[in-house]
Length: 262
Ligand SMILES: Nc1ncnc2c1ncn2[C@@H]1O[C@H](COP(=O)(O)OP(=O)(O)O)[C@@H](O)[C@H]1O
Ligand SMILES: [Mg+2]
Image (cartoon, rainbow, N blue to C red; front, side, top):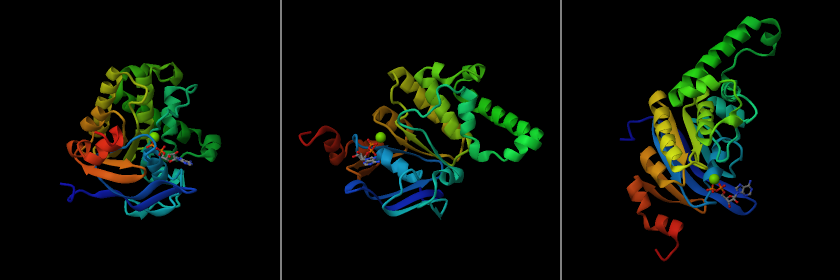
């Protein structure tokens, strides 16, 4: 099934060594167009580090990374974002004092063509661009929670957790990425909010046909409902991959989560 799909991302023998602590060891992962892959592993197993290496926050100490057949290693974070990889963070990185609109506009920064010169001498171009961005922000919010459109100019800090996460997802989608990395999107949510969030991720997929998703989650319901295949890591090494059933029943995965006795 995967073979006739276009591969958009791959990492080969990826390694991240923090002064002797190997957070990632020999990781080999391909991501295909329009698929959602779950990445699981106990606390401290290297999941966030993997996202940080993909997005250029950390420079891998070994191996290689490719996106759309081009090498990512050594590229700056803004450059990687511009190529079409966006993310959300385990702990929210929204600017709580800024409005919903401003937070989403941050995600469109790379799509902006009007520059400083236009801000001074070509106001029309700048205003037209901001207007287009605003329309896009409204379009995105409409997918997740149309009530948020009325709150476009309200500070994000006033919103409940689920809506904040939605604004973050809108910001990640705003730049029309090809791959989105979601780091524990259900963190801090109630079970009801988590259920809504799973629907949100399905909406992301139906509203952006070719987008690929890597989702890190502790909540196994989220993983099983959202992802088509799952990769498990422990101590920075892959221990299993396959369908959710295969991976969740894998003895090494059970041991990693539950200890040797089980
Ligand atoms: N900047 C860093 N410097 C040193 N060690 C780090 C750094 N970032 C992460 N680590 C270590 O790498 C390991 C994996 O961490 P992390 O990727 O955050 O795990 P996870 O997201 O799976 O819980 C941990 O042992 C952590 O302490
Ligand atoms: Mg993490």
